[in-house]
Image (cartoon, rainbow, N blue to C red; front, side, top):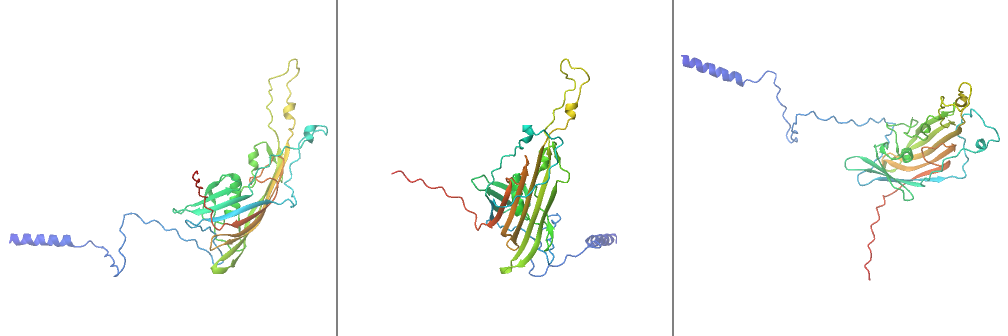
Length: 345
């Protein structure tokens, strides 16, 4: 009797252990022919970046190079000697004018020597296997090329000196968001840098002006499903003011021998003569961008600079009006192979 009771208790214990936990969910059966489920690593899947939502009447302008097939174009700058000069920003009047007989007052301010600017720049925008975009900017005349990393919209992330960076931004940078005809945006350019003149420069009241605007004029259909986006450029930066020389700190304790009376600070109190300077850079342009191909079909513009005194522009162009023209390069020229030296006879 006791043996049969013990066996019954053991059987009931095994039955309770084999029961499934309440609330357990049965896995769904995969349909026949479906691929096997990926192996679980225990980590949460990485979020997938959502594609930008483009309104029906807008376009997303992006550069579209492919690995092994870079986008190449050439920018030419031609000085227009017949273009009329334009006025720079007004300079602040001098605090103290010298006499007419003073030769120093009659001598003009020494202007900076004109910079040597290449007449052409070749741009090569490449995409490597890792998905990184690189820009190589090569000046004409045998100058050393400059490299930079850029985004898919042509924003320069790193690299390029100031002059090359401004010129590249002008013809490379596209709007960050999708745009509709009539909408405008600005470029990351710095055409003038008055802060580089230091604390001795005093701006003229009302002499500074700046506007930076690029406008999508229209989007028109073309062959093979292409779209042509027409862009207009209107940029202006100008400033004027007075550049005063550094003033020596008077030594109040030092007095000439035999001097009588209290020390005077009249020399330090007198206004210091300065140099009037002003600068203006104005850029206008019009370009046609191929939306599907992701490159320019054409771009033409005018870069005009006017300088007075030791002012300089951040585009590195001597005063004058320059006609700028962009032309695509069908293929990137390969480096010339070394010529074999013929054997000696």
